[in-house]
Image: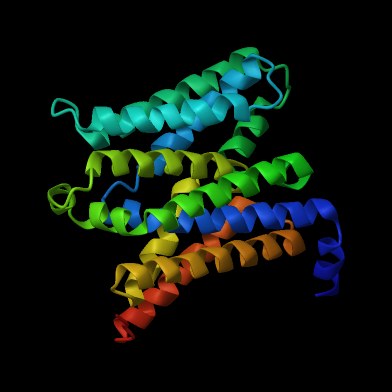
Length: 279
């Protein structure tokens, strides 16, 4: 405990904790909607797109890669949604195409252009989370805070419309809610969360951060609001515990957070199996 307290006195650790908890909270809010709409793998596809965008930023020697990664990921989210509605190419096929294509191109660009002698290490840290979480600057923390507040504000402001679109798009359209417009909104804020989460867990583990808290909450609760609240609590708790374990035992941050999420999922599954279920 004393070691943890000593670490928490360092500003770079405080920045990492703030960004980590905010990212986990935003991911959990969107995770419930994405799971219920059977669109969970959009996080996987967009994370690979973000990886490719980071590689492009590296080739162009752009130090602030957010300038490339953010708009590319948002545009890709829009294209995923639009193309996925094409009857000739189904949504899951589009996600697979973009996911694999962006991952391959990103790795190819990094391999061709990188001056680093440890290209495998650079790729691995990008895919599974890197130490850049511990080198965040105050300006980057503020960007994360602003984006997180924006995502949470959008979700709360349009909560009832997102709820309607999540469960029944036809009913939502019949009541005057433009389902396509709110699907687009969900895709865009999902892209923002993906960009926020890349430094925390890496591009390959982002889907776990989005999906596991929602699935855990669904083991116990039935109502949409209860699942969203429980998912948010679980996600923040797992992120906090994961970062603490990572600090104390020098384990990879992203993998540790995902491991804690898996443990909580199995624990909630046991609770559900023995009949501990709430509305």
